[in-house]
Figure (cartoon, rainbow, N blue to C red):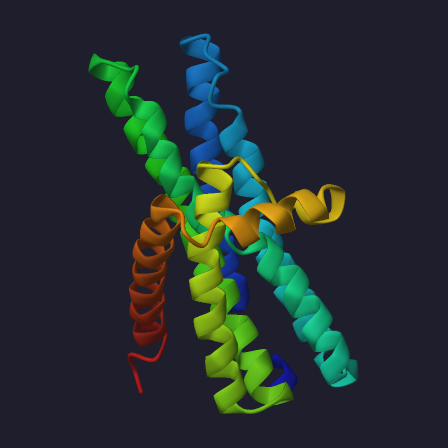
Length: 216
């Protein structure tokens, strides 16, 4: 029974996130059909990437009874590769600058909708994988993994927005990615974005965690 500890309200949460994702896509379709603008199509791909950590954790939960510590580590590393995609869409607000008037306001709410649901998906997946780590290992290791994930996600946002690396580069260009990572520790932008995004994600996760346990 403990393997499905978060199953009670899971479907409701996933359905709500799905509705918010549908709203984001509807706003994009409005722009594509009535404004004849497809420049924001990439937001849909970014949203799909933000859902991947959720899918990974859901699969891990269904397999939890049969999931060894080794397999948990492997799936967790795969999850960590895609987790930064969740807060990444926040940086797409940079694309607002060319727009004016009603077009500006439409793009603002559209990008925010994509960013909001992506962030929620990421935070939910973090909460669920933390529970898996608590069950598989122990509470101390789950806290360590959670804090490390938050810190690395902040750095991942920097790699994606500034250097244009993505999750697939870990498989397609691993040496180039590793070489850049080793040379980026003295990059002031990398330090700034890593620290500030990590703090933001950490506080956002704390709020989500507190809301989930509000009745406690």
